[in-house]
Amino acid sequence: MIDDDMAFAGRDKAAVVGIGQTAFSRDSGRSVLSLATEASLKAIADAGLTVDDIDGIVRCEQDTVRPYSLAAALGAKNLAYWADTGPGGVAPCMMMGLAMGAVMTGQAKAVLAFRSLNGRSETRLGGGGQRMEAELVGGFGSYDEFYLPYGLQTAGQTFALMARRHMLEYGTTPEQLGAVAMTCREHAQATPHAMMNGRPMSMDDYLASRMISTPLRLFDYCLESDGACAVVITSAERARDLPKPPVLIRAVAGGAPRDQRPGMMFPVVTREDMTELGGRQAGTELWKRAGVGPGEMDIAQIYDCFTISVILQLEAYGFCAKGEGGPMAASGALKRGGSLPINTGGGHLSEGYVHGMNHIVQAVRQLRGEADMQVEGAELCLCTGGPLPVGSSVVFRKAA
Image (cartoon, rainbow, N blue to C red):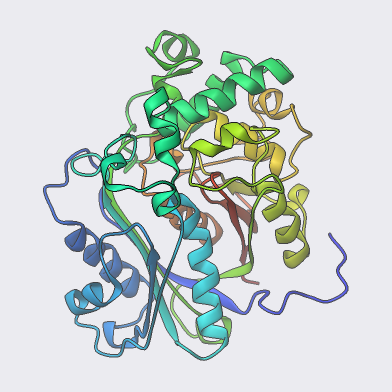
C-alpha cells in the first residue's frame, strides 16, 4: 500500500455499471454508427438502465461517430454533457477520467463511453503516408512530413526501432517478444469471441511468421478489427442500486515523458531514450492517486499494439526494472496462474483491436467474475492506454 498525505478526491467515487460490445471481425459490413449503437444499447441494458437515463457521452477524438449523432441513433433525449479525448489508444483510460469528473461534479448522472471503428475494412490504422499532402509543416500535431520522405511511415516501423534499441541496450530477445504474443494467444483460446480463438500458436509458429519490420514479425503486431465497445459510468452511490456488481474507478492518471517531443508518434526516435514512455509519469501519479502499487494488481490489461509495447510498459509502470520486461514476459508471469495475468481476453494481439476499449470491457468482466478466462479472487486491475505519444492509465477495483 502506498501512503499518501491526501486521498485522491475521485477515489472510488464513480463506477462502471454496464458493458457492451459487438462481434470483432475483419469486415463488419456495417457503418461505425451502427456498431457504436449496438455496443451502447448492450451496455445500457447491461447496466439495468434505459436510454433516457443517459445524459452524457464521451468518445475518442479520432472516432468518426459524434456524441450527438450517437445520441440521435439511440433516441437519447437528455444529453447534457459530451466530451472527447485522445489521442488514439490513449483515449479509453482518459475517457474514464472524463466520465468520473462529469459524474462527480453533477454535470451528468450516467455517462456512456464508447469506441467504434472499422479498423480493417475501412480506415486501417497501420497505414501511413496518406495524410502528408493535406498537412502543413507541423500540421495536426503530427510532424509526419519530417519523417515520411525518409521511409518512416507506419507505427510498426516506429515500434520496431524501439524494439531494436531495447535489444541493443538490454539484450531483449525475439523469444521474449514471442512470449508476449503467445500469452495473448493462449488467453484468446479461452475466449470464444476472440478473433484468434481456435488458432493456437507455438513459439515455432511465432518465429516462423514473416518479418514485417525488423525485428518485429507478423505476430508481434496487433490485429486489425471492425467492432465497437461501450461502457456506462455513474456514481458509486447510484451503482449500488443497479443489478450488476459495480466496478469502481479507483483512480485515473495520464503522463508525458520528461523528454517529450512534438508530434504524434515518429518524433519518439529523437528522444534521448526512445524506450522511455510517458507511462512512467502516468504510473507514478496513478499509484499515488490510487493508494496502491503495482505489486497489488491481481491482473492487468496492458495496451498491446505490439509485443514490445507490453515489455516497455511493464517497466514503465514499475512491475520490473528497466531492461527486465523481456525476462518477466518469458518467465510465465503474464499467463494464467502467473503473478500478473495480462490481457485475459487475448488483448489486441489476439482478441481484437478496438483501440483499447476492449481492455476496459475485459477489466470489468474480470472484476465482476464474468470473464471467460476468469482469474479467481481478482480485486484490482490496471488498464493502460496507448504508449505514444503520452501515457494513460486507470485502476479498477471490485466493489466490496
